[in-house]
Image (cartoon, rainbow, N blue to C red; front, side, top):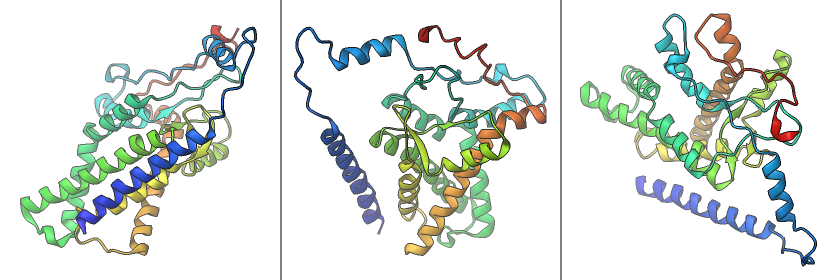
Length: 285
């Protein structure tokens, strides 16, 4: 059963990657024949890229940037929220956020997997599983807790691998959450809920959130290899997928309103400064 699940996951990744590459290849039109005097479309796009560069997100906050009670504790827990949240650029139309390259998506996966908060959450969840005797075949005691800790860490690492790196790379998807910031609370809440189905492509356009659904499904299927007492079948797997997506949606809502929450409760937070005007980007003038 374990080997079959691993083979299934690897097969899915290979098939999806192959299909995605074929779709990209088929979607590329043949280059038109142009006279030497006429500028090519590639040259026009190159000049446009030079004159209108993408906008880099605000740099990651550091513990030194926080100033308030329990700043190290709050800063440690805030960094994972900020790592996958960006502010939309407030510039002229056509300017977009800079793309995460292959190495950036890989770095995002590694940072999220080995963040101190990840180990704290893993230890806490393993303790709950120990108390509830989840996976009885692990038994109790230090050895049972160690097995549960390893299973929890494997689950979180595999989830981040699929959602932050593998599927975002295959589908050219941006795994970050884009805050709305401005607007009514209802619109911002709806915007956060929509991220479960709508994401940003690397070119800034909207697309279906393949990483969320395929990544969650792959994680649930793979979890059967290190959770031997999991209930098998479609219904239990669908329930776990739904619970995980609801959990991710809750974090998106928290990311959307985190700046206001931190200021309301006077938590240390360094927000992104607003530009002086919409024409403040010299590259677009």
